[in-house]
Amino acid sequence: MKLLTKITMFFMIGLMPINLAHAAEKTDLDNAKIYVTTISKQTITLLQDESIAASDKMNKMYAVLEDTMAYDVIGRIVLGKPYRGLTDDQKSEYDVLFKEYLLTKYSSLVGSYNGQDVEITKSVRAGKADAMVFTKIGVPGQEGIVVGWRIRTIKGEMKLLDVKIADLSMVQTERDQFQNVYQNHKIDGILKALRSLTEKMQAKRQS
Image 1 (cartoon, rainbow, N blue to C red):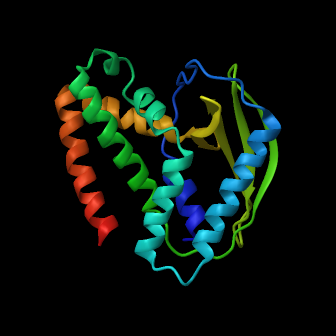
Image 2 (tube, rainbow, N blue to C red):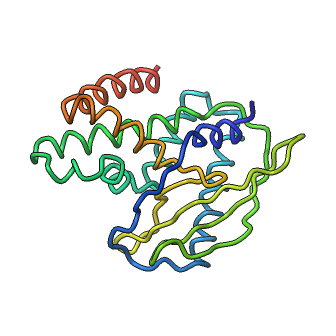
């Protein structure tokens, strides 16, 4: 399966309504299109470079995602209301573990790449301040996949907040999984699971 197909399929797990309306600066729609175009080109250039080993690509992709994803905001949305009830120590550990979990999970999707095209189709307002930039990803032998990239401006910088395919959301998928663990095992279960997952992911990234 082609890389971009794997990435989009990875996000297509489930969707329920989710509130992403945290305080944010208004994102310019045209600038959001430019931002997504830049990210796409940067990623494609990296993945097409056959001189870079697969493990090195994963590490470089980690750095790209670290620079572009609003992982701190995503982490709070994913855990939801329970986040506000955590102690300072629990918040600190959760923030660190969630960042490692999220970035390593998606950077590990780097694999074979066969030159699918990414076309920016439109940019619309999402909520009161965010921008949703829609792209069409060409897949050989298939209809193009429409992907929406939700961009939020935080402290003057645009960040990737969510990815949607056919109205299916990356953030909601993660939220569903975390809420299931929290309901059964509370925050101790969340932290234990994150410790285990990040340890395994780090070993894979460093191998």
